[in-house]
Image (tube, rainbow, N blue to C red; front, side):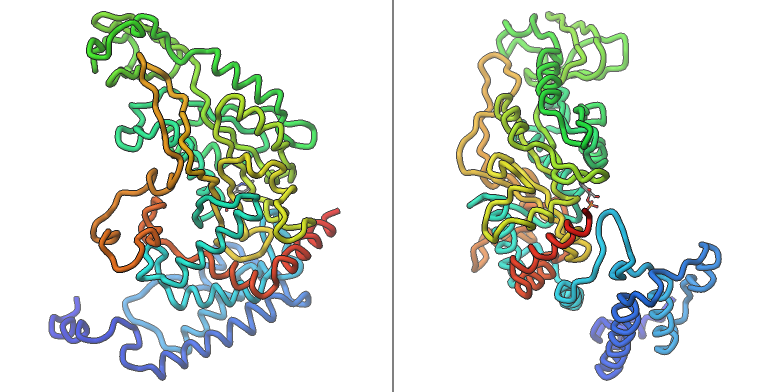
Length: 478
Ligand SMILES: Cc1ncc(COP(=O)(O)O)c(C=O)c1O
């Protein structure tokens, strides 16, 4: 335990391990930068060096001396530790580092990452991140232009998996806004559709968001890994045909007559009747409500299709035009997961042209996930969720009870879906436009800055430079 006088003295100093010694801070950081440049960047990208000095885990633990002790170490020891970390790590910028998903080192993106780390701010309000709030807005706007949208919304997320989960959550919220407050009990069983070649984050997202992995209906893919739209249509129609429940006894009742919570079931209760919505899941279960009898079926309400532009294993691009037609016919949210190879969208098309590769019908998707940290080599993490987010009123097709129809405004969906208006952070009487406080669009509180590395790289190389890089990657892959 540290003695109280020492604690009090320390409290009056700046919070820093080199408190009051700027010379020591500078010497440490100059030395670390030197090691990074020599070991991680020069050697780490040289073909005559190893990609990785591989060690078995037990040996590596000893070499790294991982234990954390009560006494601190000298600067020399710390610098040796930095060298060891780099030495035994995989050099992902090495020309012989081949990975399914990302590789290469872009110097401008790295410069952006160094500045981001050094400034260490959080992207939630304009007052703490004025430059990055405006920059994020512009980068997202530019990405939307490439997708083919002249307006909309978006946010940088911690990876493509999370971007996909946001899309699922937004689609569900857009259809059932009530679920934000009242949770899963307000929902019927739902179904989302994706191909068998989709990324596993769709399954994970279904579990994480409480939909359950059974809610993911797997659509056939052709021999090149592309979703088969006819099978999508068939599966959606099948889900629509199987009614999630039989409410024949209830439909004729007045709202007030509906019991809000009363039934007996022989199996564990997996179904609810709440405020007039009858909710259920699983195989057929007979309910005995005071005045009504209902039967639960195995159907589910379709709400989202997740197509993939660049599947993880085969690199297939789903036929978006045909899929968008299906979504339109059934009133479903179309999400396009371009996280894997979506950066390829930049290739082959001239700057400012809507991207035919990523999205043959981009303007018809509701959301797009795009990972510049993969093909574009912007560095982990850099993943954008883009939303078309129009300002028109849409009629959401909810399960009707009596004459209830739910109308949903799709504008500002991110904030309405995830916001909680914390008054200590998002005060509404600030001296600037509080729309610039983007923190309530996401489920995180603190959020790292992910836009600078992409912005700086884009500034340095222009869209044409990025495009050339992608074209080259595709050419090398042939
Ligand atoms: C198609 C696709 N979607 C999503 C992801 C997940 O992206 P992240 O690793 O950024 O979470 C990947 C990653 O490989 C992917 O290939």
